[in-house]
Image 1 (cartoon, rainbow, N blue to C red):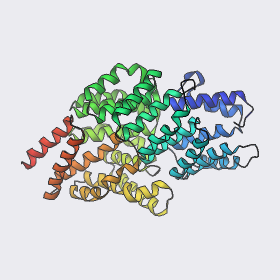
Image 2: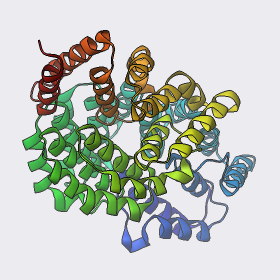
Image 3: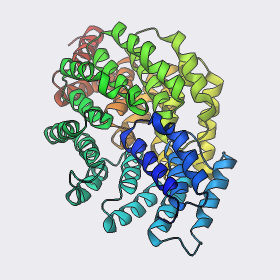
Image 4: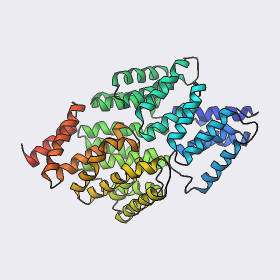
Length: 448
């Protein structure tokens, strides 16, 4: 790396370890402390600016389209590539982050893959690509990116165990559940505080309908993963999901109030805001009154409603608007989204045009009890919803909304579709109390 400062390199490593491990290190003052010390040690440290700005843009909480400070920092980073001391590898990293900041996420991933082709032990490129594939819903790429470089690693290399947790998540998202479980357990055998491996295991239990096993796993390992504050909120979200599946709504609400809502407020992270909205919306679909909880959710989202960095975030922002009764704001979100589709650039512009806008409109239609419109809008794109990003478990909320809308639609065709979708759901996860409740509800409404 192009720096003569040992301190800058140490703080770069400290930042990288926190990022890969989803866990802030208090000994260096957390992310804020290590980043501040790193740049203070060498303000011209290229890879220091790469990781600092990379964490900003991949956090999806701010955009260089609106944030003048971020825009200026990205232009400064781009200009750093012109310095004669900057290496080709550093220039590639600069290019990738700059592309991402302009919304060209897939292109950024291509640059990181090019880096990994030459430097398979570059875990920063690997982690940036891993997270970005997740944002684009590119599940096979997320899996294969890790699989390609893993043979170059061994247990003597720092952070080695985390690759198995990353691989586990990619395997789980491509329905390789047995392989995912083995990879996750291997990662946890190396480091029991690997929150991402814990997260992958939580997904496996979710997708296989192992609600009791999933709850027990998270409960018995809670002291290990709960200290990883960057992901703990999301793992609590998974825990609450098991309870919702089983109809244990009070237990789910207890986790929401005690952990998810508190952690989201303290972190200010988009991932945590999304978890809040997702849990409330699922509970609402189950007929649980959560109206008083939506206002804080909306307050957290409202400054991001027109960012349009990810359609996944937009959809959850719409949930918060509607849940809090902010109809005018939900209209503003849709109008802003239309403007972004017409005038914006980048991957999310095309994703918004094809899927994102329809999804947000469907959420609004559902709120307004236009259930037939929900079905008519979502059915043509239901197999493309993965492009908005997120995991299979996270996007399942849209499947649940579609089933509910079809069940409530005045159209007999839609009512029959609802039963077909419930049958489809049951075939994918046999031990699914929620699916059984949906079928019982369908039968009570429409009979045999």
